[in-house]
Image 1 (cartoon, rainbow, N blue to C red):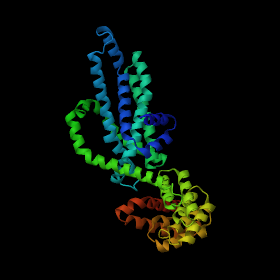
Image 2: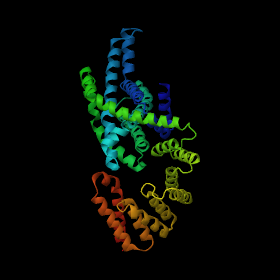
Image 3: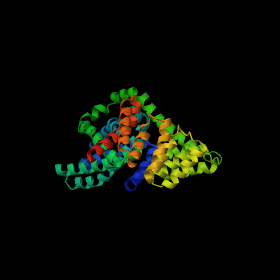
Image 4: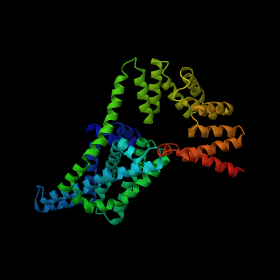
Length: 413
């Protein structure tokens, strides 16, 4: 529990680092408990229950706890449980659904199975922190008798504003969306919060023993599947970290690098890939990933060096994807002739790849071959438009890029 509290405190001053730790470990049970206690503390403070109970106890019961206190505690606990359950069962799935609409590469079902547990954990911790931060001013305002409607609205706005900022960061950290996409996903998911004011009215019904038993029986198998999927990923990462203790296992270092890369931990990923190459200089995949990362960072000479190593060791690496990456590196470096040659070699083997054909069209355009470039862009649009649904979701962005390219070309004319 101490580690959970430490992560909650860290979330207040190093939110990105704390969210990354929560994403990897996903202590959702601790997150749920902290969210429940924080909501309880906020409701207890904001409602003035402490001061009402203190007055009643002093008047009638001396130093002994009164039945009023027990009633207030139970009512506030029920009031706290309902919104936390709403966040877990409605808001987090809404976040994943909005992410699937914004980033069409992954379906809602896949996101729900793969990312529910880590996103749930991050959202619950964000909920807990946003409530705890506002609890102290709410407590003293209630004590001073300043709990009028305007003050309560201001407290609520501050609480939800801080919560949504943390949720947007969770979008970016867990789902690896850009900041603009993360903000859009958060705004879209907020539609589900329209129903939140109804939760207090349904609180006693939703938290009744019979309803809870029915919910547990109905959702138990699905919940177990969601949680076991993430726990399996955690165990896999732990086994890889253990395997890297073997100084001769290059594959373990490479696989660990892929996990770091997927999580956006680029420095750790590069260190793992470099270690794999140190162990086995013929670790082609590690060279390939380092080349891609170098190209993305603008270190084009390093990128070409790694890609050359891939070609020397295995020219048909991943069905010639290395030639696409070489072409993109040359394109960024302004070597358009070399870029076109590399991309043409890639398309000889992968003619239906939308990304490679798009960049080939860009290279042709930079060489002054505008008509040929437009032909390539139209091929991109047609190939994506007629592709199967799973491929359409993955390559739809390249169709949009090609359409934008054609529109801009027409505007320039």
